Figure (cartoon, rainbow, N blue to C red):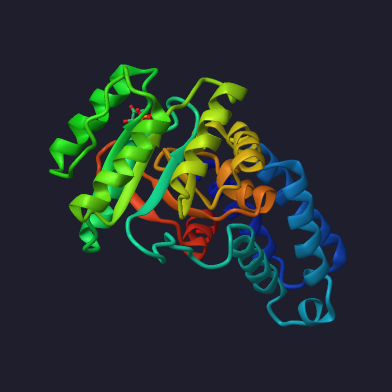
Length: 295
Ligand code: GDP
């Protein structure tokens, strides 16, 4: 994860640390290289600018320049600012309020929604919840079959949706069934498209209205970098997301999406997908991810 970015930053930091003393010029030069490394990792340019401005402001302080280990001080500042950029502290799912609680997963086709629904259901059951999986993508019958298959693999109940049904009715009825059957968390796997379009957004807005979800999570593919950030902005405008699940983070995702999403949308990354298997999901800890990026 983040191999390219990590390698670049590592060699920049080694050079900074190697210089016994640091003057303003050396700091400027180091930050220019950090800026380039972030841009090449597909981090949003506004985010890069704010980030390097903040690091520069702190690094230019007398405390750093007069320190015996100025290089290490600068690296510490980069580390702290990166944790901040990634969201500060870990944010879990909001499971407050009366059961059944609704977790709505939204996102483009292929982003990993269906897989992530099953992964989250598994996590919830591990935490002693009783989840119900709800396939609500009626336009792609394979998606319904896929979720039913995953649900039976992990022995978690799934609502018996069919492609003839209306997605809003499916979600409303599934919520009712969960209430009757004592399932406390309902995961809605909604339809995706190749692009954000109005019809899809209308449907998602209606599901939101009918089911009053406590979480609306955007599932976004980290491999798509800046595109994932644009998609997050669009979905957030229309649905007011509560968080993001960033998938396919185990590859060298270059880091762009992870580093930009929180500061562009203000919405936290709550989970990351790290593989195709259903156990391959992790809570997103900004400090751990920053450490992985910075080594
Ligand atoms: P959906 O169209 O949004 O429902 O996407 P799917 O859940 O069908 O996932 C699309 C593809 O991405 C499938 O081949 C999944 O196995 C794969 N996938 C989902 N999450 C991850 C992940 O975290 N890592 C990897 N490597 N693949 C993933």
